[in-house]
Image (tube, rainbow, N blue to C red):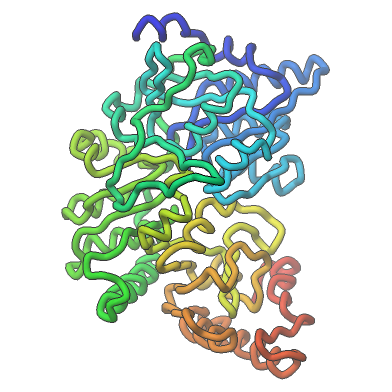
Length: 497
């Protein structure tokens, strides 16, 4: 520890007692990596104590994206979380959102920094970040994520740091931290290749705003990596065949375009299949999260570079990362989410975007967030940033869920996150629907034929036939009396069958 750190060291309880009982807290953390782990627990304990004393504590919580239970969970369980943004995946937060206890602001991840800078959101009272090092002149080196940390640090009234000795000090140098210039005369972000570096490996703040440093030694609580299931592998194979076809048609160059993949089994399956497929050579990634499947690509020498906003590995994946950390410094770049999700960069780099849908409808509208139209799952995250601006936008979903009780393909989605104008390719384990350049009725034919599970295919055909016969206008025909029959049956009986 340098003398500056020594002069700032305090306990998590000391920090909790200094934090406001009513206000806005912003933290590091992104899906779930690099988030504070001990100060939130101490603050939750203080909040509970103040509640018993008859006081009325409340707080808003801003993060980069989802975090671990040590942050989201412990704070949600106090019952005093008033507002949460922009993305979450913790059961306690989700349940309280869906019960109406927490106001959740579901946002495109690329919009958060602008909302903070322009004062659209409540101002930040306290920012807490996890770091591997801090210097006396205010340089802060982050750990396994970047997320919104840079912006939150710059706009906080007070800063507290969890200095974590568990992440390797070699993480210094992985980050490339910068921000776009602002309107009305902002220039384009000067990144034209995935491996371009234009920022600093640390955030700089005024040292006197750092009010305390808590020493920790804790891992991120990411779960164990699950091997892709059969349906995920089938979806991945459909996508790879499509990419090879597009190369043959000269619509994708032979050296490929950078890949973006969301979180989860299907996204991991795509990378695993690329690793195993001899027809694929070295690729680049421009994405938000790197998971264990990146090591499948690395181990066969097929990764040139990967730009991300977080490293979210299992224990086994973390060990692989540590074993090769000095080599991976030249492969991985950790960026702020307003850069990783920047619409102009997604467009100019020509990203092949692959994201997961909860459900899609016969005309190509996609629901990423709401179960049966009203129940929040996690949030839109960055999928909209990529879908609207990608060179190729792919949405993926197994055709059925809950043992066949739910069809992922419905007459009309119960909530729209991505309109038909933003979807190009829709894939299930049944097949791949290329709906680019197709009018609505033709899109419905292709989606039903290629993506819908056999259990629901006849019912879907019957619906389209009926809607075409009864709809007053025929461009995008729907029978509004029947369009949500499948969802209503699900709510009433537990099945769409």
